[in-house]
Figure 1: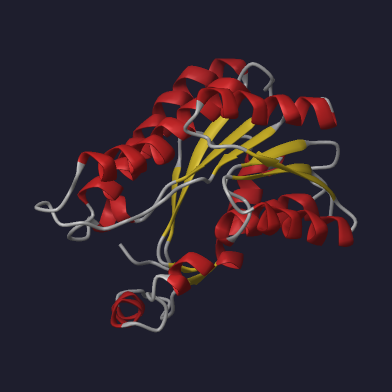
Figure 2: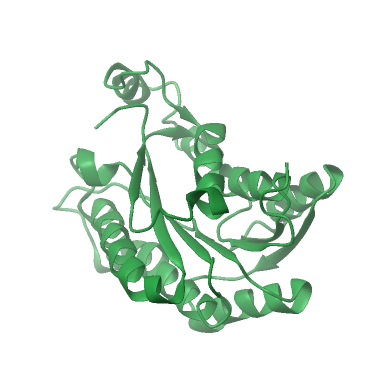
Length: 248
């Protein structure tokens, strides 16, 4: 399978979880991948090693996407290593639930800076190099449909990502660049497990609310992103793909 042969992709926040799965899936379709990480170099190096072991090409590049210099360096490294850019997956994100009484400026700024500003800065740096047929995929969240209690800031960031997706689809469409978002429901990742959410009452509630009767896995999300990156999705832009097993 090589629907992304000779293409180059940048995946932010790709050292673990959904981002790692996306990086591996894009590489399996033939893309050379820049595996971005903020702090876990070891995790990113393992993703690169897994891609190379499967016959693919990848390079790990560190950087905080909420810093303009880091975002620009990330894209510059893609051009330096592989000579072009075709796909950008804005996956970097953090989540932390907090009641309205306990929200702080630091909580707000950290989550908005990474989830929203990071998406804008990486995209801003990338569009200088994306041409006709380019694809930007933002990773949002089903929380924009579910609006769970104590998620005002996190859900607010993902609502912003939804809006940014629609705006940029219109703005970049005339240049032949597509912009879409994939909005996962609950997905079992390292972060979910370390937070104690896996096998918790919350997971049981999520499963009970999901028509397909289970919570998501990384492998449920990566193929959707891959589809949006390929020419198979050439007539798809400005879409918010809810990937939640029917939970809404």
